[in-house]
Image 1: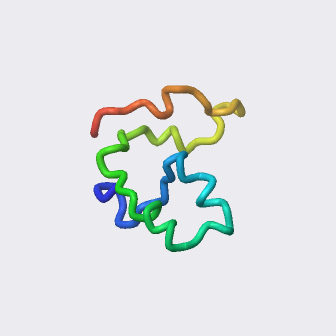
Image 2: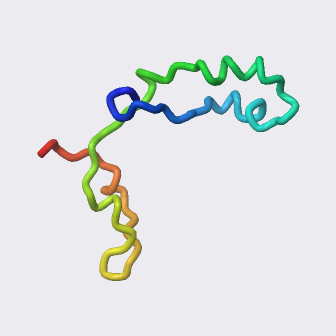
Length: 73
């Protein structure tokens, strides 16, 4: 994520969902969740500008090609 942005979103492993959402979970036990390193586990690709368009000719802009990788300019 460091290559994309200086702030990292919290991406939870599904194993931590219940503990994260439970207000009774001690805060100290959530430190493991917050320190979980995701570098090397994510894949990212450059996508076209079309991904930011909500509709084309009044039809929803929703197809698999929107998230397919494109070649750099």
